[in-house]
Amino acid sequence: MQRVRTRFAPSPTGGLHLGGVRTALYSYLFAKRHGGDFVLRVEDTDQSRFVPGAEEYIMNCLAWCGINPDESPIHPGPYAPYRQSERKEQYRSYAEQLIRDGFAYYAFDTSEELEKMREELRTPNNPSPQYDHTTRMKMKNSLSLSVSEVKDLLDKQTPYVIRINMPSNEIISFQDMIRGEIKNDSNLVDDKVLLKADGMPTYHLAVVVDDYLMKITHAFRGEEWLPSAPVHIKLWEYLGWKEAMPEWAHLPLILKPDGNGKLSKRDGDRLGFPVFAMDWHDPKTGEINKGFKEMGFLPEAFINMLALLGWHSGEEKEIFTLAELIQTFSMERVHKGGARFDFEKAKYFNHEWIKHSSPEKLLAQVRSTLSSAGIICSDDLYLTEVIGLVKDRCTFMNDFMQQASYFFHHPTTIDMESLKAKWDDSKKAFFSAFVNHLENLETWSAEQIETTFKILAAEHNIKPGELQLPFRLMLVGGKFGPAVFTIAAMIGREATQQRIQHVISLS
Ligand code: GLU
Image (cartoon, rainbow, N blue to C red; front, side, top):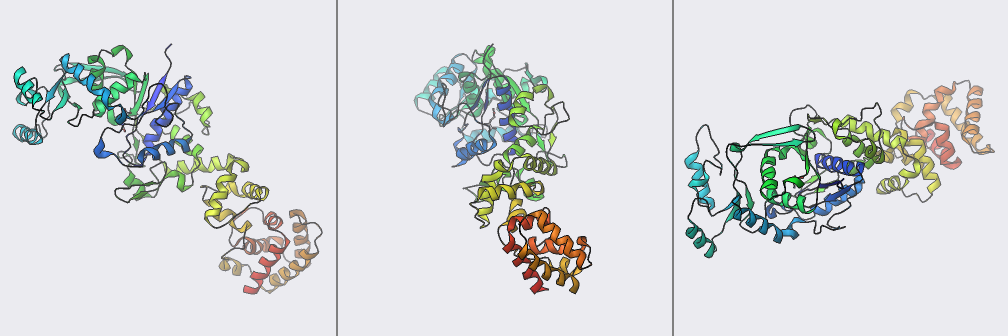
């Protein structure tokens, strides 16, 4: 059996949309499920769309997700180079082979001539006429001109592109792993440019040549590429490689939350959630788009959510590690229809992952989250305990700032409104006495603090339940956090006494 090889082939044109990450993920899962290779190939032949920094950004996103390519521009394998711009030289010979075999032709039309053709042929039924089997003989190309005219133009170094000579009256069909048999009428497909005037291949030629040379066996891409598929099918055939053609998987779109159309980055801005894997700073426009990472998602949660956006495992279980996904993933359970993005569901996955992760695993990230809020904690044991106490209350990693800060410093604000609702002189007297009792406590533990608290409450004739909220507000500043006696035990005697006294003095 042939070794399975899949590829993710992004163009470095901007932020990495979650649809792109999902394509990479499915491609990776499929390769790993079958013990094969996952390749990252950068499709940077369209110089006009090239954005500096985008390639590195894409690689960082994949690394953050834990989707590690076996071969890539920075970790090349036997089929290097892995950037199409560096493979430029090899495409021309294939384009020329196609011309020799009658499957492609030189086209010398200037942009004015192309525009003129469109103007002349435009009708209400055909608003944007194409360069195709109906128009090509009216244009200036090596099919319509004589051999000597073509030679003359080439000798004079007239700029040209090379176009595919699409057949007419043919049904072009292929098998898609998700959609089954797909048929296209060749009459509706135009003669796509294969090699541009600057000598660069277009995506159409490059994708076929590279998938062939890199021995790709399964090609995953977004369904927006379906209309181009017949061109690629014909190229595989015309280049004589039909037997080696990869199996195709055109992944369904990720839809807006209301199901109306493709999820775009504008939807994210509008609805307040990220659409990119990581923050993307566009160097051309200066625009910044939020990423899942910076919003406080764990990569495991992001991947888990994406895997289930368009695929189901066939089990009730929803929480999967990457290793479990590799074991379970199968193409039969990839949905044909678009998958609606649901940010609430994404939050659910993140919350579950934070809950299920060990404090030790979260340690480094929480430390950096806290340090960005000015909280420096060098005591790993203490920080690990804090994480264990609050992680169930965090939906985003950034929530640790609020949920954990009072373990490191006095609360910056106190919810006095809530305190006042529970406050009177008898409670004030209780807490003054409590501060003194704490001074004499032999063992500083949650149990001891609680016992003293309850005995003293009974002596003061106040139900302990009436006192717990004020105590919490003193220690935490608000109505949240784990058991209040545990918090007191953690922050220590001195901090507990100071916080009680501070609120007494405010009240
Ligand atoms: N370069 C194409 C893109 O960025 C990739 C399509 C493919 O995977 O074949 O969408």
